[in-house]
Length: 194
Image (cartoon, rainbow, N blue to C red):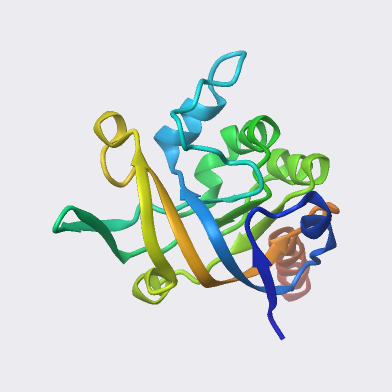
């Protein structure tokens, strides 16, 4: 039975999640890809964020959504996850600086992010790749967009209100990492075959 998770997510709720938990996430999330992560993690001090952009207790979604504008309103037509490993250089710092409680993407992340998840009380949620239109249906409203002119549409930070966005905990706040387990098991099986 999936667990319902609502943003803002408390540290206690994030730490209560375990590897393999199915989650239906509702509330505010933000998309962020390479340009946004570099900006958020860059420099010795956190950047000043525009009014209304507040990551505390929310989720960052590694996604470059396909957006259309109709009658002055933005609408998401596709919102599939992008490969998270690209953000490994920056993700830990973003977690520490801004109080993010969940990262959504595909493929998992590395040891720096795993450590930051433990330190900060956050989780990595895997979304299903190849289901961009299905995941877009969970987006109920585009609340706003930040850095659209600076970064371009796919790299901009989109503020989205979602309802029952489906995901699975594949890296928890206790150092457990399903991606690493699968890699180790695969290597073990290959050695048996060889």
